[in-house]
Amino acid sequence: MNRTSLAGLAALALILAGGAWFALGSTTSSDEADKSDEPGGASAGTAGARNSGGALSAAQIKALAIRTEAAAAADAVPLASVPGQVTLPPEARVAVSTPFAGTVARLFVLEGESVSRGQPLATVRAAQAIQFSADLARARANLALQGERARRLDTLAREGVVAGARADEARASLRQSQASVAESGRLLALAGASGDGTITLRAPISGRVARVSVETGGPVGGETAPFVIEDTEALSLDIQLPERLAGKVRPGMQVAIAAPQEGAPAITGRIVTVGGSLHPVTRSVVAKARLDGAGGLVPGRGVMAVVSDTSVAPRAGVSVPTAAVTRVGERDVVFVAQQGRFVRRTVDVVAEAGGRTVIAAGLRAGEKVAVSGVAELKSLLAEQ
Image (cartoon, rainbow, N blue to C red; front, side):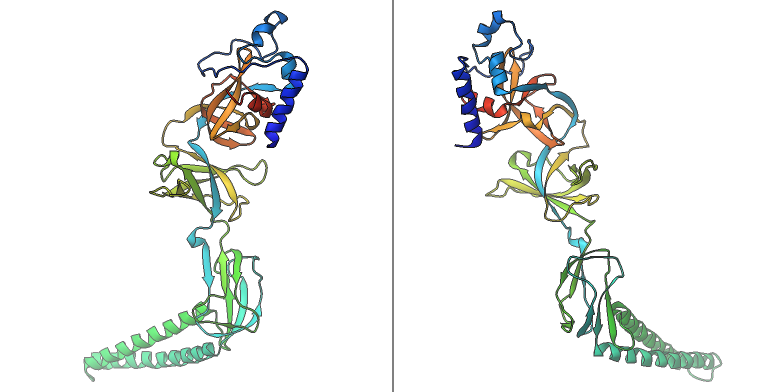
């Protein structure tokens, strides 16, 4: 037997031992008005009426430690509150590699360390880089010769001394030399190589070192990347949409997540994709959203995401303390103080944040709900 059932039975025994009794009543529709104060506040002359049809006396309420609070009106009720997981979008990961095979001479960072753009990650010794540096030096020297030759033949061609074709050939050779020098220069610059064969691998973005797959003295090059950097400020969100929301949530809708730091503003974003079919096991649809900022979130963290449709007029609803809402089977319910008794009411919960739960249907503003003693009421009204 679970803790809730034990607490309820204990409370029931306490009431029966004191000579009080409780009669179960049928659920009253949400259209009934709250025509009285909280249960137990009536005079002794009406005590007998309050002990019938599911009523509780003042002594019973005191014994169960039941406290009520009125539901507050809530504007801009969201579409739903659904579970999600913080993830990294594909473009947030950048691999750091080198086109030259070599040996790691020195490592500067550890896996998990934060780095800034351009910060050195490691130095590599590569004989191939020395060869490319020498080739680049020869290509530059040849470029100077080709440039001088092209200018000379161009002058002679204009004077009619040589055929114009020879000047055209010289210009073509010059362009070829220029392309060779530019290509070798880009390759060496990309690798961060110097003339002595030393290559400095640097962080291409600011972020976190997600992976270090080399060690000092180990080989690098080929088709593997020794480092992977993650941009921890570019986060996305994977959302599990229940079957009831399939077809209702669309790209462009707003999502909001409570910030990890208490008192910090909510982290917002937009849904970018929504799956087209239900998962056969979970009966849910996966949606993905991009967040506008990290706000202290880390990839892999589970969160509750509030989904809102800002393209339509906001819905009206109510909010109650989260402690007032409990689960009975697959339904969310509250216990409403109504005409001197408590009745169980099924509600449509759409969001929960800051100790408050937002309800879209099933409860009206001003209706009083139990915010303490809920477990006991749940046991006492189990058959309602």
